[in-house]
Amino acid sequence: MSEQEVDDSQTLAVPLAELRPALEALLLVADEPMDDAQLASVVGYPVEDVSAALRSLAQEYDDQQRGFELRSVGGGWRYYTREAFAALLERYVLDGQQARLTQAALETLAVVAYKQPVSRSRVSAVRGVNVDGVMRTLLTRGLVEEAGVDEHTGAHLYRTTGYFLERIGIDSLDQLPELAPYLPELDELDEFSESHHG
Image (cartoon, rainbow, N blue to C red):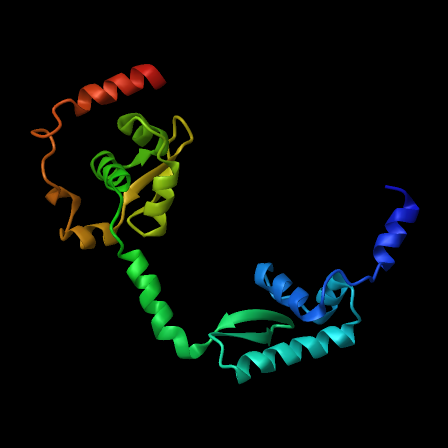
């Protein structure tokens, strides 16, 4: 890119879209609040026009009693859900947390519970499939947590949490049912996975 092109791009102030919809689109995808000057530089409008449009949008959302609002907080603008819907959103989030685990997640959780502390690769070897996505789900739901690092391999180790015990209704891991009668081949499986992955 030439120096001339750099200069042109810095002074370019040609609007790419209608101001109000452009601001809405930008604020929907922004990771953090954006101030008037930042928004103006992106949309190519004067700062005063951007400031007026933002205030107008915020007032319009209030007047229409939308489920969201546009607020200027910490020196920047951002969308927020309205306080009036806090209980509804809390119920939605909590219901999502209590949604049933998939079969894959249950199987992965069982391996962690019985083999902990255990690495993802070890869980993958026992299950025969990659468990990265499922482990993220279990971590997010608070059923599994990090438990240090394997000193030999450097892999992160995982274990079940107190919340896991609470959810399945036991006080300690000692109360987990004995697996041997159901999975007599578990030790053989471990030996197999170690000989093929070690």
